[in-house]
Image 1 (cartoon, one colour):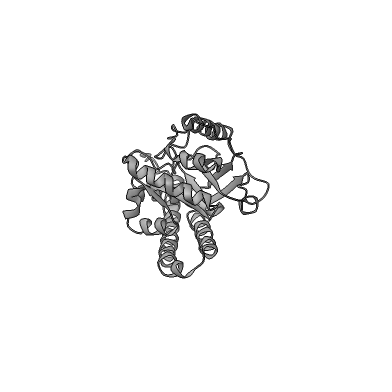
Image 2 (cartoon, rainbow, N blue to C red; image 1 turned 90 degrees about the horizontal axis):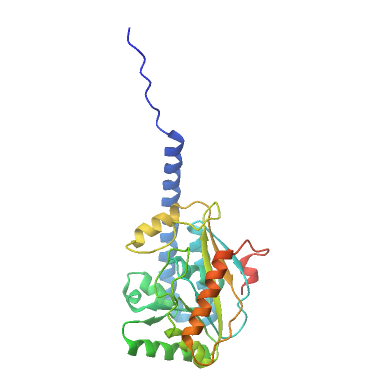
Length: 277
């Protein structure tokens, strides 16, 4: 008589959950691809015919739709306030631009020069009147600072990621002070902004940071596959700029963002679109 042999059962619930996540991620990426194609149409065909206000409406609406397509929930605290300002934020992912554009569609970003030549993305970014800078060439950096200063003096909102690269979302890298000169020269309000991506357990999400040797496709897949992803945005009070040392100012801004990240942001009592113009 043969003895019965107990065969280990496959962890079916885990397999089913993984399949469900993959299927949902694929669906999210299909919707995102459609929005990217639509955005390219808007920038290429419609933008030349629209006013600045109409362009900003499209930018804000498009950014919110892309975040929704990727399954990202947006929470925000603080007020941006009217008039010219520079927003100084920590940099975690390519998502940061859409997050801040969803809250502040009039914002103009500063990006490294090679982004201009990226397929599709470069066209979208350029359509949002991005400032491109090549930090390794001091002359071009000075030109970018002059252009940003001129824009701030006309009432623009400019977003700077002074880390110069993306971080892991747990801490903030040292802030480079060079682009802050544009705000100092024009006497513009500078507001630190803390960005934190949280998972379903309110822990910093490991799926969002776009760091090291990560690829854009790999980052897209992880982000789309994440469950209950929340981005928390905290706009902090403006800091007074020192009269001389922009390095001291950069350190103060970095410390403010770092402190906000450690304190988390929390869920707002009102929708982000109501608390942030």
